Image (cartoon, rainbow, N blue to C red):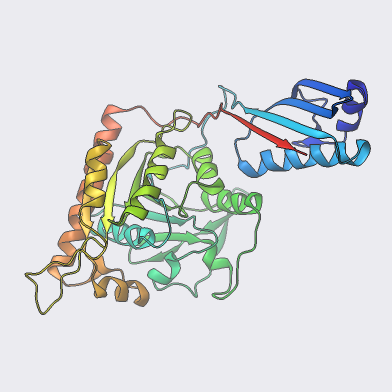
Length: 371
């Protein structure tokens, strides 16, 4: 097994429709074939930080080498991702602020916060849109009572544009509009990313003051792809007070704070902070722990944007398609309005102090050894 033989076999492996032997993906190759065994070590460089792209490249290389030289060859790949400096972030026309609403884990009420934040912003006179980027578990159509709607299309300059569904003064697009309520979205990462790209850039959003992106929980491929697609103004992170949620939300904050990403975190919102029974309004029961989100914000020197109690009416309002911020309950409206004012204040402050978000530049190496 010689170096020339391996390179000849790798001609069949492609990245962006070109052989990796022709487009400078292979930076270095070492081939060993002696009494200790056979090994191929590759240093690669690509310009896409998407996890599924790197994984497919590694799998294709492994398959090509094992097919021709046998399964006993140890294949080691080190992938360096470098985004070209001259590649600019693609903006969405006529949108002023793009806010990512994120969480470290599922079930903390991230979509509930997104929906009520959007309603409160609209009530304050802002023009608001929501992209439901939680591809595999879209909740926004249900929370706005439009789960049976289908977006219309219009033609502008020979291009077909999607018209967002509008509810309670908020423009909405979601994968949920294009699938049946009980239908699972069984897509690989590349398909999901392509669909989100279309919902962002092939939609007639018009003028928006705030464009909220309801991200899926965690720190996966879709989060990374969204931040590659658009210049996110800032992120709002939602958590509940208990330690298991706090541990995961630290990872989400760390993702935004990563030197390769640098999306400012506007602050932390704590959901399900306490239970206050209607018959005993003077009592507060801290079912999931106390001040977890507030203490985390303090420890990380981040703004604490507010706390939301565990209230049955919030859940009922979301299930009924009329978010709690629409209720006549003065206390509920005050809670959401305070949180929303804090988000607006931190967004304005961020825009005054910091330059626009740049395209993310992933330069870390990802190594993988497969035998």
